[in-house]
Structure formats: structure tokens, C-alpha cells
Image (cartoon, rainbow, N blue to C red; front, side, top):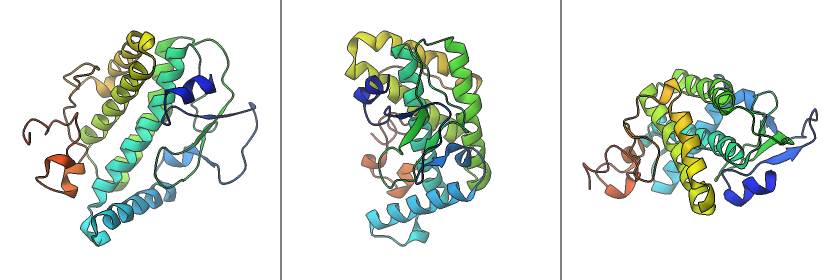
Length: 234
């Protein structure tokens, strides 16, 4: 299962470990990301500093909520991709925050450590509910509470991450494209994503903006391809 996920791309890759074991530092429990915590504040602060450095700006020139949205989008996509990939490949992952570990690495998808997955995909409804209930809803609530980012923006981030995961599976494994889009559709049927107008697919356009455009206002290159603003600035 782990090899199959890694073959789909870096956002899908996980490090399996024997069930019941705890990895050594620098691994940290994901549960610190699913509640308001110093870990979330520190990661948003680090991303804010990185965005400022890339633009040759002072840190104060980067809105905190833009950095917070960037962190949320990255983590939401990181959680959704292996979960969707495992379901499509016919396996299962233990997504409980007290079983899932991460490393606070700079740049790229954060490393994830999971108990070695077993065979059998189980019930897809149960998988979708676990992903939302254990990870995405608590993460989104924590980011919204700490940094004042609107729920509409944050759930748009989740939709974007889910769609991107399905698109990547379809690109890497064309024979699994239908299964990937069906799995994404099942996630879009969960209550937090039902406000999205478009179903998952290659032409998906989210109903909100991740706020990245505010890094370079008016610059079309700062607007993501699935952004609601893409047509307005096209």
C-alpha cells in the first residue's frame, strides 16, 4: 500500500510503521494540528516569514490570514491525498490524530507516519467520515479560530485539495481515474463541501479564493487555476 501511494506523488506518500509503535523525534503527533496550538501558530509564523522573504518584503507586509490559509491548504491537501489514494487502491489508513504523526519540515508536503495499513478498503462512507471528523473539521476549526480566516475560504481549500488529489491519481494511474473521481465525489457529498457549485473533475472551479492573490494584488499569475477569481482576472 505505501509503495502504491508513493508512486502517486509526494502528497500521497506515507511512512508506515508497526501498529502500536511510536516514532522518535522529530516526529510529532498530528493531534497538535487539530486543535488551537503553539504548533499551528509557529507553522503559520514560519510560512509568513517565508512568503515575506520570497517577495523581498517585511514580515508585517504579509497578512496573517494569507499565511494561515496557505498552511491550511497544504495540510488539508496532505491529509486528503493519502486517504483518497488508499481508498482508490483498495486499502485503508488509520487517520486518527493520536495514531498519525508528522514532521515540521520546511517546504513541500509534510512527512506523515501511519500505522502499517492493512488490506481491504472497508466502507467508503466510513472512510470519508473519518477523514472529515478526525482531521479536516478539527483542523479547519482550529485555523479559523486562531487566525480569523473565513470558513468559506477554508472549506474551499479542502475542496481544492480533494480535487487536486483525484486529478493526480487520474494523471498517474489513468485506469483508476473513474474510481478517483468517484471517491472525490463522495467527499464532496459530505456536508462541509456541499456548498461547492462544481463537482470534482478536470474543470472544477472552487466558489472561494485561497487568498494567495493578496500577495500580489492584480497579478494574474498569483491566482490559482481553480480559483473563483480566475475568470475575473483572466
